[in-house]
Image 1 (cartoon, one colour):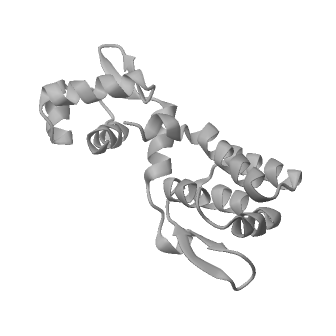
Image 2: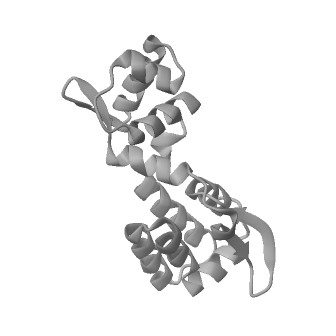
Length: 167
């Protein structure tokens, strides 16, 4: 997965045509390895053929957004109530997704009822679409595992984690 992420990250920085040898040097792989990673990314929809080369897709940009950590002070801290910190903090959307799968549902209920998930996503990641989905979930007033399932579904739907992490 690391090589694929390197390829995506470098693709976001390139502003003009680069030949395969130069791109391979930039991602610290051989040209054959680089082409193989690009083809894998193309099959999963993270990059697409553009003319005689490849470019990163919106799906690829979303992957990077989900994996890039935010400054520690902007992380999401899980509480079960006011002043009841659980000791868990998410500093990326991937971390958040992983923690939602295992934290006590009381924490999910506490944060969902206050609109904390949507506020964090909108403020820290500037993702109005996912924030809107969290508002919809809040209005459903779900509890327990039903809430966990909906929160995970919303994240996975927006960021397609099933397409990111198997590779």
